[in-house]
Amino acid sequence: QVQLVESGGGLVRAGGSLRLSCAASGRTFASGGMGWFRQAPGKEREFVAAISWTGGSTYYADSVKGRFTISRDNAKNTVFLQMNSLKPEDTAVYYCTGRYLGVAGRTRTDEYNYWGQGTQVTVSS
Image 1 (spheres, rainbow, N blue to C red):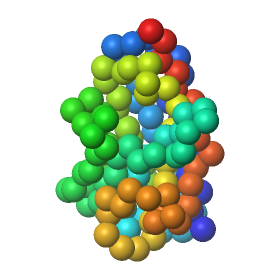
Image 2 (cartoon, helix red, strand yellow):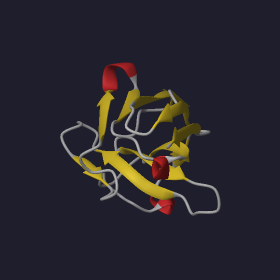
Image 3 (tube, helix red, strand yellow):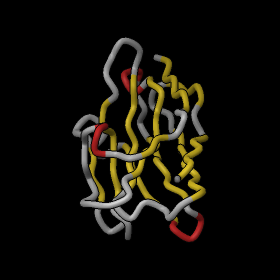
Image 4 (cartoon, helix red, strand yellow):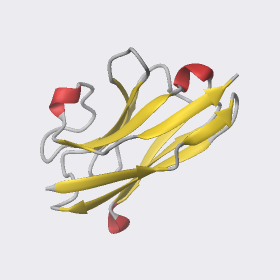
């Protein structure tokens, strides 16, 4: 089993930045790629970004493209989400997730094998 622990969430004003981290431990770090999803109150969990095992391929939801950057450091078993130009509509609980095998960049929650507990991001207007 892989355990994921997110950190870096918090309260920020619109236009500000936050950097989320996701530390993995346990079984082999996801060779099928890692991702970030988010869930706002009353809404379904939605795809935000994903990254391949090597980090050479990245994928983004249209709503965050150009503002968010996903990266990973496999030596440290950590995935990052740099969030710039934050907007109030980015407010949500952000979840780190991973796949054991398969193509990276998947956008459905049922395509991932394990999840972190989430970290709250609140953007004030």
